[in-house]
Length: 239
Image (cartoon, rainbow, N blue to C red; front, top):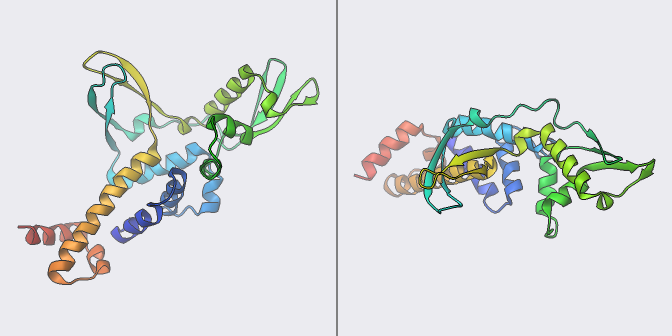
């Protein structure tokens, strides 16, 4: 991605919700919003992991806090370590039979997350998504509303949907060297990639300011430079 395109994506997504930022990031790889909304969450995240690899490499480094002793630790892993291959097409509906109920549902899509972001706050986002993704439920030949499904049925449906689209919910197992405790942490590629994009874009704009102040060059000319050439000029300016 060219520096100007990176800054444009950052500017477009700066005031967006997390799901909206995901749309902006997909747009940089040629996925328009209509197509992007139809991707399963896992499909979207896999594409964004690819984008992270192209922009920043495949190694991920982050800070985490132990929930038991509050010790801060640095975590590093490769994106391939958290790749999860779906058993089939993750946009296909699944059917679950449990406790006499038959439920047909589809895994959540990126469009569902965008809709959730623009909906009035729900006390339980997971339940809201389930109600949106259930295509039909029956018991003894009778249609059943999603809100009438017993907890055991909802839990089984949610588990089956997670199995169908495993990339949508990646948990990284972390260990604390201080107390020896272990826990699972969600790896949210949208938030993580956005943080890195934000830092890179802000760094580029600082470079534009420094070079334009000294040489009078335009933003477009500075961003069009190769990273190596731009860095060399910055070294000269900042001596």
